Structure formats: structure tokens, C-alpha cells
Image (cartoon, rainbow over all chains, first blue to last red):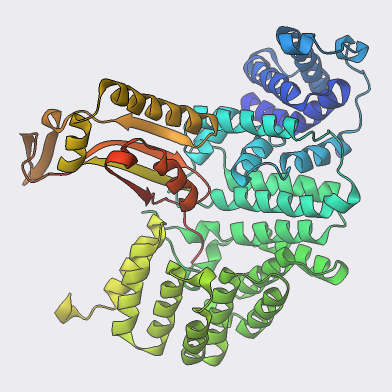
Length: 410
Length: 123
């Protein structure tokens, strides 16, 4: 590992700790965040050439504190406010424990006044330690767009009056739901069908896993955090087999399972097994359990669909949703045959949440395909292909339709 | 999610434009500037541009390795693209809200289309 990469990883790890230390010392989350960003950028430039300092965290806190004071002084509006001795004093040589700060930051970034997109950007910046440029490249939007999102998010946090401390217990569980959702969004965003890793793009799935691991270290007893981590590990384990060199997607049933990451699967299965035995059950744990059943099967035909169906019934009872409904129907078809699945699909379609959703046609096509009604299957594959927004999925659905086209009509 | 707001002009909308006073045209321009600023401030703007007159456009096609170009305006195009906003926002409803603020929506037609993306959830 080159000095540059090692320094980068170290900076990301220290970022939330430094931010936490500064906010505790000075208050003013938004200005502290700006100051920390600048300190991180300075380190990213200096450390690879001058070497990592003996006390990297202390270095960052010192540089960020100086910058924070400058920013504070430059802001004439703040000058009018009551000056506190603390704002101008040198930083505390014994910073507050890092553990509390990272959790506080995670929860702060998911403040209810922020939109999910803002929460994602703010979390990647403040907790992930990614630069604006890195976030912009990862999401394929201009840097200015991300800069505005973060700036606006910080403003919102400020005007909402949110303080830099853990929210009261009553609010905490609701906020944790938002945190897990944001981590899941980051993970999903990383699930692009890119044909190869780009040296200059941060791998969002790895970033999501890293942040979730951090959260698990902070809250080892939380079943849903463990469930989310297990779900990410078990899903990401399949990544090597998911895409063809041309960028085409390989469905689960057709993946070469020898390419799956056995170590990640083992870790994921161990984690979810242990969690289900000890914590109250929740939706991420159930999704992880389903992923585990898939990942345990040596071949697609060995999949224990009965178990998966049972898990989806449980998931439907505690966290119903249109995608749960559809996935459950697929499981019904695998256990009771395609006709049973098609009947339930017809009934489920009445739900307005599913109306017009392309996945309904995709599932219908798949079931008709299994049932042997090729013409109807083809029609629905085509319909689904037109309505999906995912290019890889579109290609897959079109290719399924093409495969069902009899040669004389091609 | 990304959406493209497409701004079209057609003979009817062009006629309306011709009938506008200078003050109205200036307000039209300010409307675009304001929308741009608002979208940039909210972090939803990716890019926005106005397009030059179709007479300045070129159509390009390649057949059997030969590149052929033709100069605008193109007789068969009564309606043409005048500009666009590429935005990223929560939902199509939000995109429609923004589209309604495009000054051209009052005089012509504005279209909102979801943008395809390269991500694929597992199948």
C-alpha cells in the first residue's frame, strides 16, 4: 500500500473524530465541518510528501481549530455575537472520546429536516471523510451540485436548532431508522453495472460497509445494525458474478457461484445467525436471512425456497411494501408453481403502490416464462423493458424477450 | 433520480413570443435565471442550457462509413428543442413542480422525462 493510499484511509478514519472534537470544543457544526474539510485537504497534500505526523489526529485538530477560528473571525455576523472564551482558547489536548462523537455525527447527519439525498451527501462528508469532489464523482453529478447540497444541509441542521449531542432516547430509535436507511441508500447507489473499478472513484458499496461496520462497533447490541451489515456483506459477496465483461447483468439464478466471495458469505451468515438468536427481529435482519439462504445454496436449484417464502411472510407482516409483495410472489411460484404465483400477482396488482410499476410486468413475464406461455411472457418482458429506468435491466429484459422469439418471427 | 426538462417551441409558441413586449421578454429571461439559481441553491441542478436557433444546427449521419451532414433548419421539424434543464430530485412530482416554473410552460410546452441510469439492482 502506497503512502498516499495509507494516508487517505487514515484521514477518512480520523475525519469524524476530528469533527467531533471540534464541535465539542467550539460548537457551530457547519463552520467546524468546513474547517475540518480544509484540514483534511491540507493533510492529503502534505502527508504523502512530508510523511504522516507522529500524532495525526492532533495535527488535524490543531490545523482545523486554527482554520475554524479564522472562519469565525471572518464572519462579521458572528463577530457581533457574544464571544465566549472557549471559542478563542486553544484546543483541549485531551479530546473527548471518539466513540460518542462518531455516533452523534451519524445521527446528526440524518436529521429529519434533511432530504435523503442531503443526508447521504452529508454523511459521506462528515462521517465518511470523503471530499466534495469524491462524492460528486461517485454519484456522477457536478461538484457544484454536491457542494450546494452539503452547504444547504448544514444550514438546515443549523436552523433546525439541532445540537451536537445524542438525541434523547425517545427520538433515537426513529433517527436510527433514518441512519440505516441512508447507509442502505449509499450501498445501493454503489451497485452500478460499471465494467471495472475506476481508480478515481470511491467504491460506494465498500464505503457503506465500512461505515456500517463502524456503527456496529459503536452499537454491538443493535440487531438491525448487525442485520444491515450482514445484508450488505451477503449481497456484495455476489458482486463478482453479477456483471459480465460487457456490463450485462447476470440474474441470481444464472450466476457462477464459484465467483462469489466465500469469506464475505461466511462472515454474513455467521453474523445473521448470531443476531437472529439474540436480538428482536427486524426487517434488515430478515432481508439478511433471505440473502443468507440464497448464498448458502451451492447451486441455484438447491435454494431452499420454502424457507425464503417463510421469511418473506414474516417480512410482509412486520415491514410490508410493494417490493416485498413481489418478491414473496416469486417465492410462492418457486414453491407452489407459476400458476399460484400468477394468481397472487393478479390480486396484488390492485394495490395502488404497485400500479404501473415495471417490476410487475417483469415478474409476470418471468412466471409466464416458467409456465411455458412464451408469447405472453415475451410481451410482458418487452413491456417491462420499456418501463424500467435501469439500462442493464432493460438489456436483460430485452434479451429474455428475444430468446423467446421463435426463429420464424425474429 | 434524474429528470430532463425539455423545452420545446412550435409555431404557436413562436407566435406568442413574437407578440410579447420587451418588458415581458425581459421577465421571461429573469424567470429562467431565477429558476436556475433556485435549482443550484437546492442542489438539484445538474446542468441547464438554452439552445441556438435550428438554422445553426447540423444533422449528422454515417452510412457505409461515409459521414453526411445537413444544415438546419430542418423542414420536417416544426417543433424543436429550445433548451433543457437536467435536474436531480426526489420524484417526478417534484420535477413537474420545477418544470411548471419554466417560463416557457406558460407559452409553449415543457416535457419532463426520467433519465435512464446505469445502476442495476440484482435480478
